[in-house]
Image 1 (cartoon, rainbow, N blue to C red):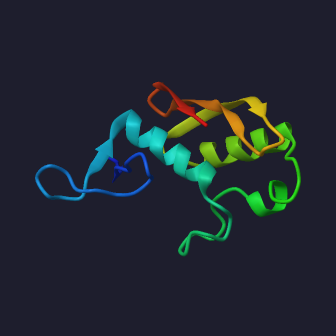
Image 2: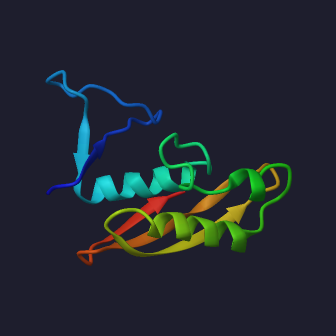
Length: 118
């Protein structure tokens, strides 16, 4: 069975395809989008999967996060995504203004490589 996901626009919202259907994506873009969704999800935020996500409240809010903790939590979230065999998180910058920059390199179960910019 081919895996598909709702396609999100640049504002992280769903939209309609030119034919009027809800836009969908598949393949590597689907995997990359699912990784991005996984690391943006707060623990206890998904109604039917409260254990999914990253505990941002515990590690990020109110203090400067440790790069190693963020890297570990993001890698765990990315590796839990369906069709992702392994991932490596690289953080290039965490600023006092609480801006995180970097990327996640992942390998799918089929051995394909993809990169998700943070």
